[in-house]
Length: 323
Image 1 (cartoon, rainbow, N blue to C red):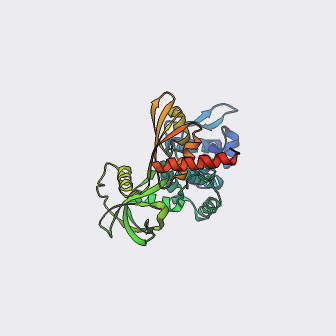
Image 2 (image 1 turned 135 degrees about the horizontal axis):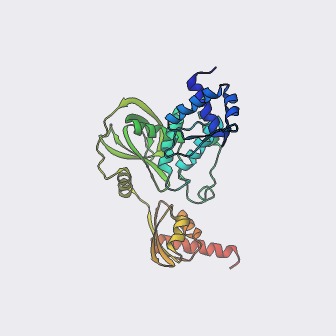
Image 3 (image 1 turned 90 degrees about the vertical axis):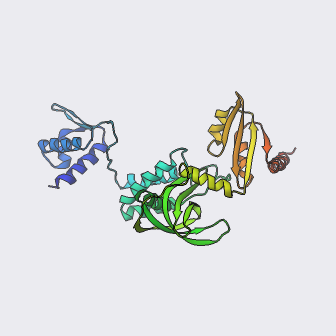
């Protein structure tokens, strides 16, 4: 007979695979007596699993919803599917849950067997997300999930890391950093941390970062010189940015515009059927595509270069249909 602990895990796994188990069938699956089954069920209840029992000749057990989420047991296929889903969410596929997806992904990868990690990596490398960016819009700065999870764990454990970093001018350097927090702004991930070689706080774009590895050395977290990590990263971007500030008036309700391009722009209401759209960009192609996706008339307020681009695109589109 298997040990009590392994049998209890097996019981939990079975309860999660079916809505309701007749008691006799469940005991037969576990190769135990009904009395032993009842003791195992009581053990799970003490661990916080809300297991309901139905008495009588046709009685049985089912796992119900509780007031808190207990630990779950998943099989190999479910673990791979879960990791791939969290990877997609970590890349910003679903607005508002990227940071929590990274934390969950880090926990999952930490306990995942090497053979399953290799499957996740292979599937992730051969899968292209079907987003409008991938279809010809803005370039989506994807990040290796292993980079995300390594840094997430280092932030959680206050462990110093080393990695290679490529600056905007193409210069590649080695960095020794005390990581503080991961931040997702717009379409990019950043790491806020204290650079030990430069004796100061820095933010790093993760798509320019390679080969992060923990050193095993722990540190006492320093006080961040900003209200939070997002504010620190945002201030650094604004001071170093050499891009465009886009502003346009769109003839559509603000809630409609937010639904379509709110992930990449700031939308403020002017009236019931009119709103102001602001965004920043390194190039002018994707703001034109974004404004075009709204499906409504719009007027460019700034910069003047965007007006010229829209006029040029409009002329080419007109010629394409014979006007």
